[in-house]
Length: 172
Image (cartoon, rainbow, N blue to C red):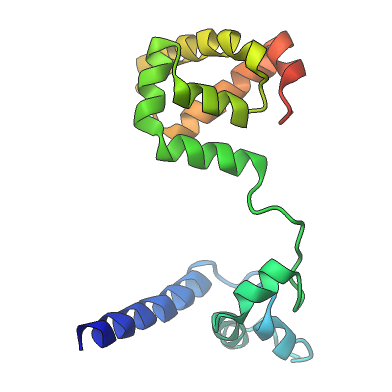
Protein backbone atom coordinates (compact mmCIF):
# COMPACT_ATOMS: atom_id res chain seq x y z
CA UNK A 1 0.00 0.00 0.00
CA UNK A 2 2.82 2.39 0.92
CA UNK A 3 4.62 1.60 -2.33
CA UNK A 4 1.49 2.37 -4.37
CA UNK A 5 1.03 5.70 -2.60
CA UNK A 6 4.69 6.53 -3.13
CA UNK A 7 4.49 5.64 -6.83
CA UNK A 8 1.28 7.67 -7.27
CA UNK A 9 2.87 10.66 -5.51
CA UNK A 10 5.95 10.43 -7.70
CA UNK A 11 3.81 10.16 -10.86
CA UNK A 12 1.77 13.23 -9.90
CA UNK A 13 4.94 15.15 -9.03
CA UNK A 14 6.53 14.18 -12.35
CA UNK A 15 3.50 15.28 -14.39
CA UNK A 16 3.21 18.48 -12.36
CA UNK A 17 6.90 19.17 -12.85
CA UNK A 18 6.55 18.76 -16.61
CA UNK A 19 3.61 21.14 -16.73
CA UNK A 20 5.46 23.57 -14.44
CA UNK A 21 8.48 23.63 -16.73
CA UNK A 22 6.29 24.25 -19.77
CA UNK A 23 4.32 27.01 -18.08
CA UNK A 24 7.37 28.63 -16.46
CA UNK A 25 9.21 28.94 -19.74
CA UNK A 26 6.43 30.86 -21.48
CA UNK A 27 5.88 30.12 -25.15
CA UNK A 28 9.23 29.30 -26.71
CA UNK A 29 9.73 29.74 -30.40
CA UNK A 30 11.01 26.23 -30.93
CA UNK A 31 8.35 24.22 -29.06
CA UNK A 32 9.03 21.50 -26.52
CA UNK A 33 12.15 20.17 -28.18
CA UNK A 34 12.42 16.76 -29.75
CA UNK A 35 10.68 13.45 -29.19
CA UNK A 36 7.37 11.71 -29.74
CA UNK A 37 5.31 14.84 -29.01
CA UNK A 38 7.25 16.95 -31.48
CA UNK A 39 6.80 14.31 -34.21
CA UNK A 40 3.10 13.76 -33.45
CA UNK A 41 2.42 17.50 -33.79
CA UNK A 42 4.85 18.13 -36.67
CA UNK A 43 2.07 19.04 -39.13
CA UNK A 44 -0.29 20.65 -36.64
CA UNK A 45 -0.98 24.19 -37.91
CA UNK A 46 -1.03 25.81 -34.44
CA UNK A 47 1.93 24.01 -32.91
CA UNK A 48 3.14 27.14 -31.10
CA UNK A 49 -0.01 27.50 -29.02
CA UNK A 50 0.30 26.72 -25.33
CA UNK A 51 -2.23 23.88 -25.51
CA UNK A 52 -0.40 22.13 -28.34
CA UNK A 53 2.94 22.58 -26.60
CA UNK A 54 1.59 21.17 -23.34
CA UNK A 55 0.34 18.11 -25.24
CA UNK A 56 3.69 17.76 -27.00
CA UNK A 57 5.55 17.99 -23.71
CA UNK A 58 3.18 15.48 -22.13
CA UNK A 59 3.81 13.03 -24.95
CA UNK A 60 7.53 13.66 -24.61
CA UNK A 61 7.22 12.85 -20.90
CA UNK A 62 6.01 9.30 -21.55
CA UNK A 63 9.54 7.93 -21.14
CA UNK A 64 10.18 7.42 -24.84
CA UNK A 65 12.05 10.72 -24.91
CA UNK A 66 14.91 9.29 -22.87
CA UNK A 67 15.40 6.67 -25.57
CA UNK A 68 15.01 9.29 -28.33
CA UNK A 69 17.63 11.57 -26.77
CA UNK A 70 20.13 8.80 -26.04
CA UNK A 71 19.71 7.22 -29.47
CA UNK A 72 19.42 10.42 -31.50
CA UNK A 73 16.00 9.50 -32.94
CA UNK A 74 12.61 11.27 -33.11
CA UNK A 75 14.22 14.55 -34.03
CA UNK A 76 16.65 14.49 -31.10
CA UNK A 77 20.37 14.82 -31.68
CA UNK A 78 23.12 12.67 -30.23
CA UNK A 79 26.55 14.28 -30.20
CA UNK A 80 27.94 11.37 -28.18
CA UNK A 81 28.61 13.47 -25.07
CA UNK A 82 26.77 13.24 -21.78
CA UNK A 83 28.01 16.57 -20.46
CA UNK A 84 29.82 19.54 -21.88
CA UNK A 85 33.30 20.01 -20.44
CA UNK A 86 32.30 23.03 -18.35
CA UNK A 87 29.28 21.26 -16.90
CA UNK A 88 31.40 18.37 -15.61
CA UNK A 89 33.74 20.78 -13.88
CA UNK A 90 30.95 22.83 -12.34
CA UNK A 91 29.13 19.68 -11.18
CA UNK A 92 32.33 18.29 -9.64
CA UNK A 93 32.93 21.60 -7.86
CA UNK A 94 29.35 21.67 -6.60
CA UNK A 95 29.50 18.11 -5.24
CA UNK A 96 32.91 18.65 -3.63
CA UNK A 97 32.65 22.32 -2.69
CA UNK A 98 33.58 21.92 0.98
CA UNK A 99 36.66 19.82 0.27
CA UNK A 100 37.69 22.09 -2.62
CA UNK A 101 37.36 25.22 -0.49
CA UNK A 102 39.53 23.66 2.19
CA UNK A 103 42.13 22.44 -0.31
CA UNK A 104 42.18 25.78 -2.14
CA UNK A 105 42.94 27.46 1.19
CA UNK A 106 45.79 24.96 1.75
CA UNK A 107 47.00 25.13 -1.86
CA UNK A 108 47.01 21.35 -2.31
CA UNK A 109 44.87 18.21 -2.16
CA UNK A 110 43.30 15.35 -4.09
CA UNK A 111 40.09 17.19 -4.92
CA UNK A 112 42.05 20.16 -6.20
CA UNK A 113 44.17 17.82 -8.34
CA UNK A 114 40.99 16.28 -9.76
CA UNK A 115 39.65 19.74 -10.52
CA UNK A 116 42.90 20.60 -12.30
CA UNK A 117 42.53 17.44 -14.40
CA UNK A 118 38.93 18.35 -15.26
CA UNK A 119 40.14 21.79 -16.32
CA UNK A 120 42.55 20.08 -18.70
CA UNK A 121 45.78 20.89 -16.89
CA UNK A 122 48.58 18.32 -17.14
CA UNK A 123 50.21 16.90 -14.01
CA UNK A 124 53.38 18.99 -14.37
CA UNK A 125 51.31 22.20 -14.14
CA UNK A 126 49.40 21.25 -10.98
CA UNK A 127 51.82 23.04 -8.63
CA UNK A 128 51.28 26.33 -10.50
CA UNK A 129 47.54 25.71 -10.49
CA UNK A 130 47.52 24.98 -6.75
CA UNK A 131 49.35 28.25 -6.01
CA UNK A 132 46.93 30.16 -8.22
CA UNK A 133 43.92 28.44 -6.58
CA UNK A 134 45.21 29.41 -3.14
CA UNK A 135 45.55 33.03 -4.27
CA UNK A 136 42.04 32.95 -5.78
CA UNK A 137 40.61 31.44 -2.62
CA UNK A 138 41.84 34.43 -0.67
CA UNK A 139 40.32 36.80 -3.24
CA UNK A 140 36.99 34.94 -3.23
CA UNK A 141 36.92 34.76 0.56
CA UNK A 142 37.63 38.49 0.90
CA UNK A 143 34.79 39.18 -1.56
CA UNK A 144 32.47 37.00 0.52
CA UNK A 145 31.93 34.61 -2.40
CA UNK A 146 32.56 30.89 -2.06
CA UNK A 147 29.99 29.34 -4.39
CA UNK A 148 31.19 26.56 -6.64
CA UNK A 149 30.13 28.52 -9.73
CA UNK A 150 32.16 31.55 -8.63
CA UNK A 151 35.08 29.26 -7.77
CA UNK A 152 35.13 27.62 -11.21
CA UNK A 153 34.65 30.95 -12.99
CA UNK A 154 37.45 32.54 -11.00
CA UNK A 155 39.79 29.63 -11.73
CA UNK A 156 38.90 29.63 -15.43
CA UNK A 157 39.53 33.39 -15.59
CA UNK A 158 42.89 32.94 -13.86
CA UNK A 159 43.87 30.10 -16.21
CA UNK A 160 42.95 32.22 -19.22
CA UNK A 161 45.03 35.11 -17.89
CA UNK A 162 48.04 32.88 -17.11
CA UNK A 163 50.16 32.51 -20.27
CA UNK A 164 51.51 29.06 -19.35
CA UNK A 165 48.33 27.50 -18.01
CA UNK A 166 46.20 28.92 -20.83
CA UNK A 167 48.38 27.12 -23.38
CA UNK A 168 48.28 23.73 -21.67
CA UNK A 169 44.62 23.72 -20.70
CA UNK A 170 42.70 21.37 -22.97
CA UNK A 171 39.39 23.10 -22.33
CA UNK A 172 40.46 26.38 -23.88
